Image (tube, rainbow, N blue to C red; front, side, top):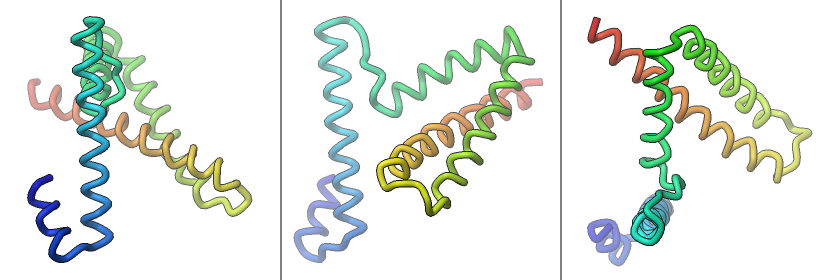
Length: 126
């Protein structure tokens, strides 16, 4: 963040400002997660790294214990990515709907990547 901040002071650009804002948001989420852990002994599961780690553990367990269910969930997630991508292209959807679609698309893309990573990791072990 310090490097980006120094560049923005001298030569600001939209991309750098956006990147700095996203880093700041992630930082704040991180502090909230740590604060919740310190106060309650539990994470909020809002930060992408913690949320994905938790989801990853669940999916890895599902892969080991019920591979058929894992593959069904993987298929459902791929369909969700297609569905929300299609929704974003639909001109009849309101801006509010499109924002929700964008958020859902991002969530399902992250989940799809977890499925792919787990599958690759386990194929390498066999």
